[in-house]
Length: 475
Image (cartoon, one colour):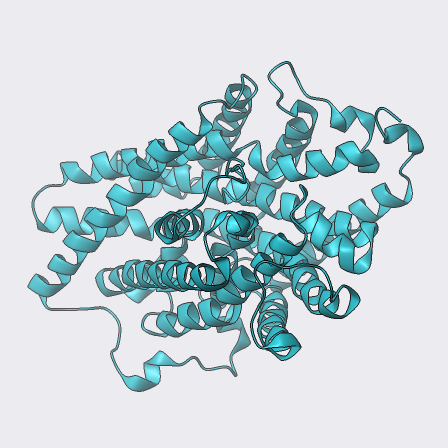
């Protein structure tokens, strides 16, 4: 979830289609989503295409129009504020920050599991151990905070290296070796038939993991702020989005189907099946040592990525807070310009939520519930985003928008409604316990999600209602 880590691009620099395709693809693509969707087998193809068509592309197009119409710093805060006022705008930027913050424990769980698989003999024992996972989360997260406190001048360079080491190379190896493995072995562990392509919508508890696709597709709205730097954005931006979305969907489908094909359905674990797939492939080709190298690379790459982006989620909130929406204590930064008070608050949230590992029955149930909580909060923000875009067509019809969704207000209603309805559907599904694995008591699962959602929604309302004039600096 490195959605806020992109550096500002000066207005005189013109971005080509290829640059935009790479930016959007790297922002959204993550192998962490493969294993959860692998539970669906061939049906996962439908979910990926549905989410891309009804969510990923609408988010990209709507955000581009809003970013060019309201290009000032603040992103979603400015867009939603223009439509519904500052309080709703503050809630939107807060939800964007909080949802990304909640994703950190899931990213760190992924790192803990990857480290466990460096020693294959003890991998299963370690990767399912709650206390080992909790210790890794706390050590790695707070070490990242310490590293970030020294400044982030080399963030772009580190991020590029981390992306290549931890994502691009491992995925290329997975695709090539995995497809070769399936071809040579001649067997797959999921059924191939036309009716398997479509889900049974009557069993809602089996659709829950599909809702997580929306979280894995999130973040495209951040790159939309750079659309004004493109040549001929009205033509080139939709092309770049379509190609980037296609690449993301194709990579997710290939990675997910490979896990489904290689790992028996009843053995798929949403946390560690990606690494089990690597291990199975490399053992077949008698290069088991490759598994240790790949998992180590993924761990190093993911850790480097977290170190780079850990200050990212709070950047937008920090900028908005300095306009008088946060207490002065949270508006401070250290000598390197890093907003440490907000990072400490972010760390407290990450640490507190990580202790769900002790309450819930397994590592994968914690991974799932934190992912669903992040999805719920992020999707509420997207509901505000889509409704703002539609409303602003009527409230501010004369605002110059260098990129504008075609076919007038009808086009906006189609794209905006498509995104709004699909987000609302995914939001509702996110409260249902998944039927694919044990998450403990269904009542406890729903209660935790409901209570945390209500608490987290009340916090920005309380802060806004109780803001003081003294919070505005240099008044």
